[in-house]
Length: 376
Image 1 (cartoon, helix red, strand yellow):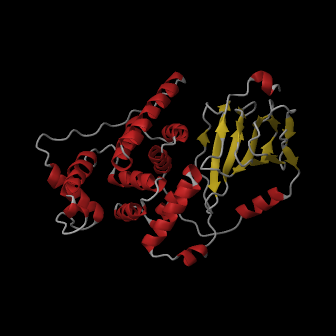
Image 2: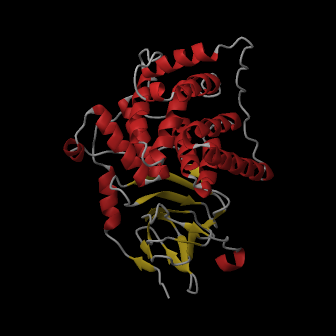
Image 3: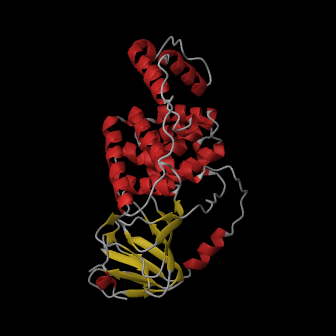
C-alpha cells in the first residue's frame, strides 16, 4: 500500500524567503491572451489532445475568441500538417459543446476579411514574406526555392497570401503561433531560429520572447522550453557558458485560471505556475480550492509534493483514511498512488503543488470523488 506522508516542515519559511529576493523588474511581458496562444499551438502540433482540451478552455477564459482559436488551429496545419490540425479542430469542437452544456457563452469574434476577386496571390505573398524577413527574398538564387520551385510557389501563394491575408490574427500573433508549434516539435531548430528572428521583426522584444520561453516551461513542457531557450540564445549570440551565469529570474504572478470541471469538483483556480529550467525537472503552481472543492482521483508517475499555505484541507490515498492538512504541512504522495486532495467542508484551502514528468506526463486523471467518498 502506498501511504501518503504528512510532514511538519521548515521548508515553507525558505519558500517565503525566496519570494523576497530583489531583481530588476520589467513590464514588457506577453499579455494573458498571447500566453494562452502558446500551449494551444504547441499541444496541437505535438498531438497531445488531453492537454489541448485544458489549454483551449483556459484560452477562452483568458479572452481568446472562438474565431481566434479556430485561426490558430488553421495556421497549425501549415507547419505541423493536416492530421494534427484536424485532430485539434475536432477536439475544439468537443470543448465548445461541453462549455455550451455548462452554460458558457463564448465570444465568436471577428470573421476574416474576404479575399478580393482580383487578388494577386503571388504579389501579395512576396510582399508579406519580404516584410516578415526584413529584406527582399523574392528572387532566390540558391537553396530549396531553386531546387524545388513549386514548394516556394506554394509558400508564397498559399501560406503568405491565402493564410496571412486572413486578419483574424495579426502577423505578430501568427508568428507566436509558429514559434510555439516549432518549439513543440523536434528537428525544427533551424526553422525555429528563423521564426524567432521574424518574431522580433514583428515587434516581439527579447523580454517578451523570454516570457514565451517561460510560458512554454510553465504550460507545455520543459523540453520545449529548453529547445526554444537554446535556439533563442543561439540567435542572440549568447554562449551556453554565459547562459549558465544568468541572474535570478522572478516569474510575476499572472491571472489565475479556472480548474477544468473534468478534473475538479467545485471552484478551483491555479496561479503562479512555475517550472525548473533544467530539462525533465519539476513544475508546479499554487492551487486554490473553495470550501468542499477537490480534485478528481489521479496519480503522478514520479509522485507529488504539496505544501499547504492557507486554510484547512483534506488528502486521501485510496484504501486509507482521509487526513487533515493545515498551513505549514508538507504532503508527499508516492509515484502512481491513486489519491485526491482538496478543501475541507467549512474552509477554503490553498497549496503549492510540485511534480516532475515522465515521458512528458505529470498526471493521469481518473473519475471524480463523489460526495460519499468525500464524506465531510
